[in-house]
Length: 340
Ligand SMILES: O=c1ccn([C@@H]2O[C@H](COP(=O)(O)OP(=O)(O)O[C@H]3O[C@H](CO)[C@H](O)[C@H](O)[C@H]3O)[C@@H](O)[C@H]2O)c(=O)[nH]1
Image (cartoon, rainbow, N blue to C red; front, side, top):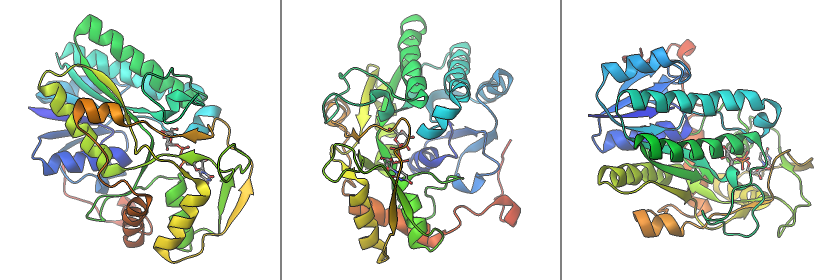
């Protein structure tokens, strides 16, 4: 039986797919960008399509024997969600609703869901525990919280077991240096800085320097993408062995300011990273740092590449080797494959 990975051509999705492929899992990947990003996918049967399309889901579920779903298909930019909230509800909440309906129709009863630290909003205390009340400050976080709650009700009514993984700030790349972070347009801090180091950008804008933090810039908990991929595999095996549903933080338990990230990127790349101070970004909490204790105690997962240096080195390896990101299809580099 196969594992269905929704959003398997995205940043976390492609690394999770690669890990499961290396573990000899049978994979079905669906992604609405599967054609454009086919070079991000190293194995499995790939379908190009949208979760909101129930007929498409019927095709995927009827053509394959699916044991479990790993669901990472979502719009995930905090700033964009502030200006296009309805798109976020449509892509994230409605897309997941259609997926759960399909799982229910085809009697698939296990799902690993990619949730986010954005559901906490401005935390009352750090490190943030899963038991701390959710209070999102942006529509992106609201949609992920709505989905977590939908999963809870779907379990009660339909017996669909779930693990929701609340990612903090994903960073780094696959050990091969052949898969990595490639968004268009890029908005994330570390890849933007690496573009400065590559000479593709002049400088970085720090979004606010009067937050109540040690140097005034925002603090985030960065976690390596391969550690996140591993968390999905661990969670999948927990559900396979009849473990209970659960919601877990996926972070390191340590936070770094934007200015500290600049210093690390400069050290790793050997290049200065010029910056200027800009306005705060709407919806940005000052500090997000995880308590990663619960998942360690219950699932035995902990981050193995936990230093910022390791994460930036790994991201730099990918960006250095692939300064333009994945080869684009219109550049004529196309893989043999069964993109449907
Ligand atoms: O040009 C930039 C880009 C970012 N930042 C700052 O750098 C930090 C990290 O920003 P990212 O955009 O890299 O990441 P976010 O923290 O906004 O978002 C990440 O965490 C969120 C949860 O809070 C969501 O999960 C989201 O998908 C994920 O990318 C933030 O404090 C942001 O204000 C800057 O100062 N300048």
